[in-house]
Length: 232
Ligand code: SF4
Picture 1 (cartoon, rainbow, N blue to C red):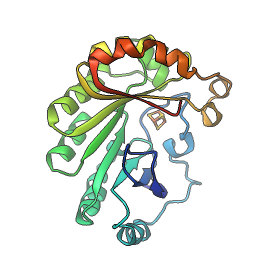
Picture 2: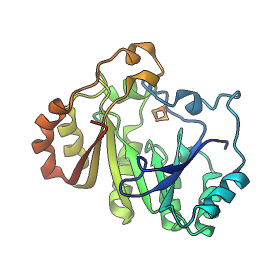
Picture 3: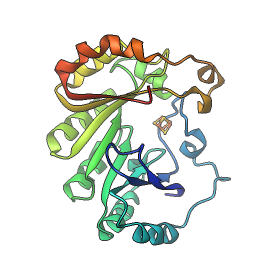
């Protein structure tokens, strides 16, 4: 597992928390709209960061930071993620994992070991054939839904989140998604930023407006304790 990015302080990656963010390379999905595609492909030309240097910064910033987010790529595809989480726990940090939901068993183990305080799982689109297009490969829907169930039953704090990529997911699809996973604690609807998308056709897409999302919001509320909009 290679650490390919580190942000010392962020208000954007964990709601109501000032966090550091560690980005690990590699992902088992090939989303055509991926905004972090070089990192997701773990390109050799990307420089690996030394965890000892990151650790020094985390020690120095302990009084300021609320936690550390591990993002990617897909962090849970690497068995070494456990070592990283243990190091962060030794520093007494709260940890958040960003995941695409395709590794339920390692995630369950990390939660049961007390290594994870918060999980954000992406839901790319409705749980049907369209998921294949969204992730650029065959989707194992049962595995993704297993992760949904695991998060809801585990007692860990969590959110499900969907990035509103035109032609991948429409505002009315959010109702279908939420009906499939309800009831949930928190659901985040995120604005799509086209400029860094992997494929050109997605860089040309016009994002949905806030008004288009607000129209479906009342229909989502019965299924989630909290629905948040990000980036709109
Ligand atoms: S799951 Fe996330 S990191 Fe992986 S390809 Fe899709 S958007 Fe990129």
